[in-house]
Length: 434
Image (cartoon, rainbow, N blue to C red; front, top):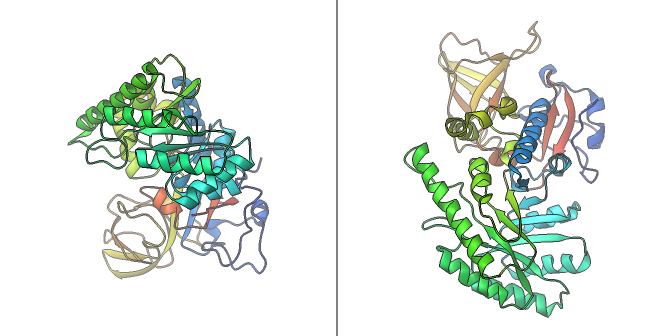
């Protein structure tokens, strides 16, 4: 069966899109598979970003199994891909909501018709607040959750809701953070005071839960990082219990949420121990699991393997699904090659990894692995500097597939990514809306 990932509202492909052939007329996404394009036959202009369908399927099922075993739910972070086609795949596998970060992302997911949105950020600014209130007033089935860490913000949102005569409450989670971190109240006591401020809006806003983000905590080594993460999650649990004891929640179901793409196992274990008097939803928000990667989250999985090898290796573990392909366009020195991709095409938190190579037009059945001594040393806007051994097989015109680090910052460089099967035949395409 053809594996098609697209959304009915997606705009068609155009020759104006990077990575799309010079087609004369626009092509609906659901017709892409019928073109029988194949990456290795040079049917696509390079550089091009591709998603390996077998890895996408595998990662989606892996997360589904993890959540079922842990009794948690997933609101995948949409800012990773901003792709409705991939959102639909995640929802089909049981995702509870779509998470976003910005007012623009809220507008996008609403335009595409998603009914349950978790804003993992503060709702700030008159236009953003008014848009959410208008959507809640217009659509009784729309559910929206957001974070607060400021009494001033609570008052501004409550006033806007009253001015608009909104007939139902907005639903907020108090965010707790940590000194030197990003957003969030800096102590449990401060967060409890904020929860009281929500309660005092007299129903304009209700407290639906407690939230925090542990993904940026870093210690001297994996063990030290784990201690920091565990202590931070304990503070979320302490706050959740305090709000429960003081009867500050405005619903019979409480949401406890944390969890990027590095510590979801610890999040589920810790938050699952809260033992509140109300029914609890443990909500993790990993977005990068769907494609995984070859560097940043590969390291996170190695850390997971150290603390929980059974989970890390369950069902084969996560697999990198995202690659960016480019031609070798110059080999100016015996130990140097230049590939035709750069910072405009691939993330550069860490350098990409040169994974495989292929020579078009010869009897070469499949791409072949490149040895670790083929190393990306730096990126320019459109050029990739490769340090290679003098006896490397690479020559001008060869194709190289690169693994990425941090999928979020590769997705946002592409309006179109192509889904490929095990032979690198294009089965469908997905659009992004950054």
